[in-house]
Length: 292
Image (tube, rainbow, N blue to C red):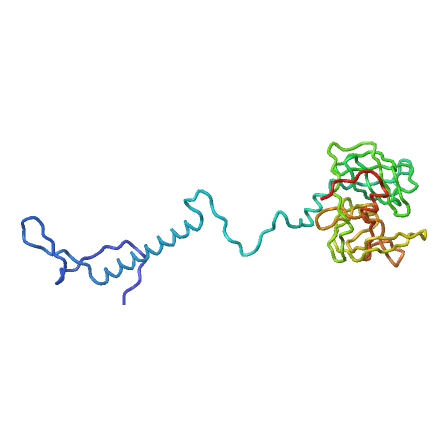
């Protein structure tokens, strides 16, 4: 038995001339035989040549498939489709797009903040839509834009029956970003919605859910009723009032105004309500932001 050694350089050994080997004539001398390879060496040479050809053909095919020599690489097929630019955005993308349009509303009592809520910039002139109950009876109103700009504001128009108010700020940030307005008439139960607001003082929070119902009625604490509402299950809490409710394309399709809770806790139990954007704009007056 022969012990296996580590790979090393090989020296090719030639056997003695065999009968039938090719003869060569050199100069004027007698014919002589060329040395031949042994059968084992011939097999090694043939196998090495075949392996080299296979590797060369594989490399050539891969080079052509990858677009080599064509100047520009060709796209390779994918096992799964990639996200198209025309496809719906992710919730993170929706939030990033609307966040610059969301503001904090502070109802002031002298120098004291009596109540806080949310608003959304709804026009190129800076008109802000919010819930009327957030600013009802306030001695003053302060608006804080997404970039930190603070300014006083006044109620330009309101509709208590819809719980909607439109605010006119005295100053505007250097860059004003109105929200994109959608069409709430196209909503259906089960559609994805995203609520953005300052719930429980947590500024510009985003939650997601679905439309749970349409044409709902909710009763205010004073016994008055709000009708034609969109019911949804994205989490909202005190501080969310006046914030935008968005569809899956990032369009503002409603203004959050209420939540239902069978207890006196006043926190979210899965039922929120919003005024459709068409009605809210009608109550707030003014020009609306561009639609997609």
